[in-house]
Length: 157
Ligand SMILES: [Fe+2]
Ligand SMILES: [Fe+2]
Image (cartoon, rainbow, N blue to C red):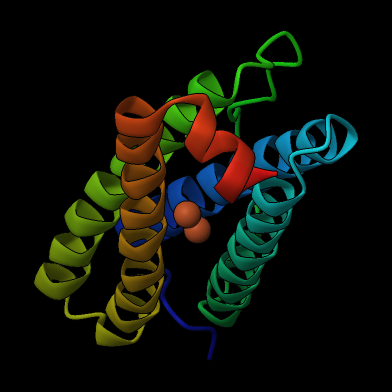
């Protein structure tokens, strides 16, 4: 007998999945831009984050299919090639991570209320990573604001 699909859960998992796909594209585009401009350390960090978001997308895709639904990627954020200032890139990513954390916390609450603890665990694991990402970008932004170009040259190039 086919499993009954909880559409509330699928909606959440799809929203998080969609946001991950957007983040992958943005971080990888920033990686390439920073790498090309000689910001090697930041470029490496961005690539690692993009790969990390990809693993989140993988876990979500697997969960959606496991629950018997189909994967749909809705409209998501796309890269901004005109954004080349390091500080703007960091600020943008900070916002992406803040929104991700809000989305995940709300989703975890719904999963709990719906009694789907398997999905809740998937979201909780992702949440811990996004909290780390946010912390990293906060630190980078604080240091740029405090030390300016000196920090960029010594820590991001
Ligand atoms: Fe993610
Ligand atoms: Fe993230």
